[in-house]
Image 1 (cartoon, helix red, strand yellow):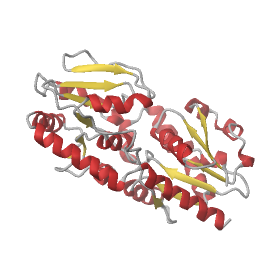
Image 2 (cartoon, rainbow, N blue to C red; image 1 turned 180 degrees about the vertical axis):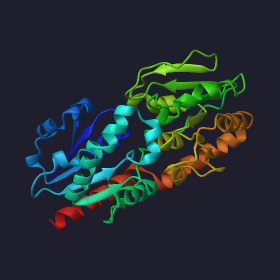
Image 3 (cartoon, helix red, strand yellow; image 1 turned 30 degrees about the horizontal axis):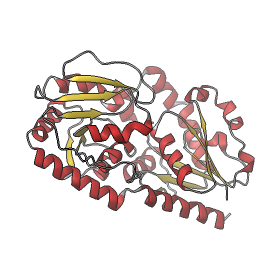
Image 4 (cartoon, rainbow, N blue to C red; image 1 turned 30 degrees about the vertical axis):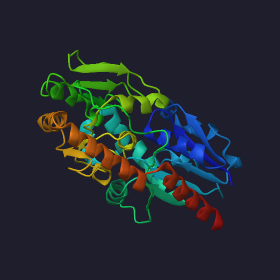
Length: 329
């Protein structure tokens, strides 16, 4: 059984599919630059799909990779076509999402053999917004708990808070300067430039730009900080949150989309009101003044990942799905 997975680089879906490639025999990722989607007619020529027994990709451009007599499995890693997300999109993006991308997605659904989603939230949103009635199997993302492990050093006086992600409004990056003005002076907010953005926020004694951090260096970065800050607007199922939890960090995130499926409010961190800088700053200051609570929340998160969100569990669920599809082919 040979599974070929065409997927764009520079996003969480790419990371998840590369992890599947590493753990599932005969699973091969065929990556391509997202700019190629400007001319999607070239996408069928990206990979040698005729040699595949199964094609596993994402719904947005799935139709371009579909082939007669080859099962097509689509995985929803996020959903951004609904009315709510328009306020976080530029004018060209809004036009693209409402016209060709929505049409591509709908045709992809019609051609899919099986549909999966990385969260209950995303699956339900797809059903509601696209009036999709067929089964969507939820397979939560998983993380390598041998690679992402807690640090052994105690919390330092200069508490470090990490924001990791693309520097966009969708990730809540516009809140960082506001949060920085509301936290205690000994706190430092470190931020990465993500996979697709290279801009720098306005200078501040509290904010520090780390630039681009290669994925293989992320475990060490998590181990150097004390808290993950994640004021995002919409997440299919945030891999960065799982990774931070596996490294024993408490998480301060937005109470939205799939995040309540990952973070248990009050036990593994705090879920804050969308766009509310005061709420995020208050929770950061609270943990900064309570090293014991910070440690307890981090330990809770590590145990939660080991129980529910391991990479092995994710791999087994996808492997079973692929085998089921082949058995009914």
